[in-house]
Length: 274
DNA sequence: CTCCAGGCGGATC
DNA sequence: GATCCGCATGGA
Image (tube, rainbow, N blue to C red; front, side, top):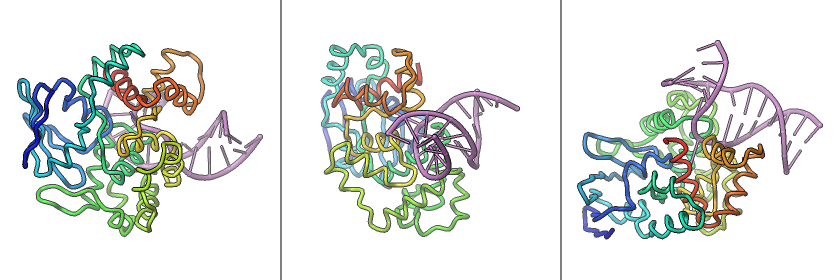
């Protein structure tokens, strides 16, 4: 797999560890859609189109540097998969989800998206985020940009009713206000995982699981293993002892160490879709 | 009708 | 600390 970058596209030849569907459908990113023959992905108000050909993928965008990092193209996923296979025997999951990559997403968007995700399902999460952008965001071309913390903090309660986020609406408002008022979310890049988790959990609507998803999908902290209803099933399939999700997560991180986030993503995707 | 979805906050012990 | 419970919404 070799990658070339030009002013308006990224070309991936022989893309053996890049699969658009597996990346986008693995529950880490919610703002995309499939249009006839290609995916459209929106992040930070920037857009790219993913075209898959016989032995080549083209990412069409005016911001190739942004999306090069977004799709984590500097990381060698063959090496990760080989280790997960040879040391941990994850052949089935890594084969099924081959082409998954852990994205590097915007921290604020990821915080809001995963507050919405709690006790919710993916089609509905996508719908709420779509309405959030339409109601609060500003229009850029034919799309709506993801709203800023200020835009969300300065909106009335009846606008929050329109997005139909249920009881999560007040979490969104409280968190947007806190960040708009100076709560610095960029310093998490400088923190280790445990301190970053504690820091993020100061925000309303963020517990252990949501914090771990944000640490993984925005800050690329890979020593986390988020436990949701699906990865809980993975644990219970192997060990039929009913411990807390916190204990399950700690068990998996102790096992997979810095590959925990990757292992979790393959196992989640396999368990949920198989 | 009930059950479930990438769980969290609050009350209680 | 750990555990139990209520919770908006919409699809199965």
